[in-house]
Length: 475
Image (tube, rainbow, N blue to C red):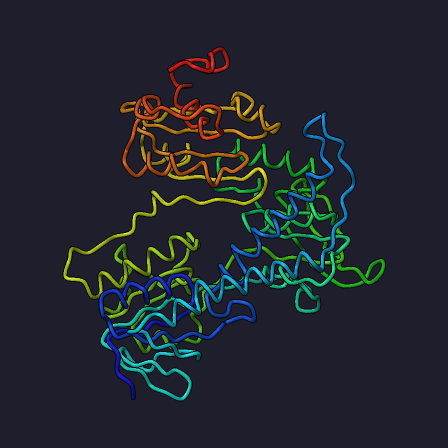
């Protein structure tokens, strides 16, 4: 039996952040990691089968698509050629480099951390079995992540389908694809493959794509996806899937929101229907760790589970499932477990998120409906990107900024952006929400002209004036 101060189950973002923090504190740590799926190896989902490879392919797809899109009349655009195999090879090379430099090499430099490439399982509140070894520690952290959730659809077991992992490693570009799911993952893959040249159909159960975002954002993005000839069906029920049809294609039968029948024939079927936690084989009951109805570990805002010596962090505790918040959760958990300083808490209300379509979607804070639900008398303004001078300069006026404020105090409680580079633009909104800034604080801040980030200031100014009738230099 090997004894440690801390045992971490997992090898992704939350686990690495926790290990780095533990190393800084001089905590003797064991990290136990083995992939629950084929792709999420050392480094976890983000670097291997999530953020890094998907955003690389989205960027390549957007660049390829723009080669044939006449944004500027002074340039003659042609029909570019796509070498799909080489695109995938370059993506794989990028992932391998990140995995080595940001994870494997970092792990080697953590003197207080011992890595066990094995599947971990609790045998008691203080003991974990890792392969053939038993590890004992007074304090433990669960950070085993999540994987694709497969819905119960008639015939699904008889069809070869894709999850995000397989969709990132196809050897050939499919001629057609049906994507089931209209949230971040489904939308990103739908646009990615549509821009490569695949004919894409997207099916979404909710009445609109991105149902948790502002309706103005969902409506506009649906229109932009239509411009790429992506067929978007919302409010549908997928009844069954099968294999057959022409050329042995996959067949998806669904019911439309009006109750009529629908049918899609496709070369590839991608399921983007949520995530499920990697908790079923951890022996959590033996450790006294409670989970919710879906299997996610239940924690408080200090990342402590129902067991007073066990913390949890990352996708294994549920939404928001983001690399950045997973890292914060892991560091907070270790701080609270070992530091003598005041306990830290995670405020999810100030955490930004993004959808890497193009244009991108980014948000922080409350939506209009969420604000009203909290009893706050709010005011909102929607600024079309057509009113942003830089948008005209770069030849892309698609998008909008919606700002939600407390009408009594003028405090900004939510910022929602659909625009080129929205994921980069959102951070002024993050600071505003985090630090309880008002629209007057934003207006009083000098912005560079011309920039896309000026759109946030214009949105703030729109509470007082018609920005469509403003000069570029009005304060």
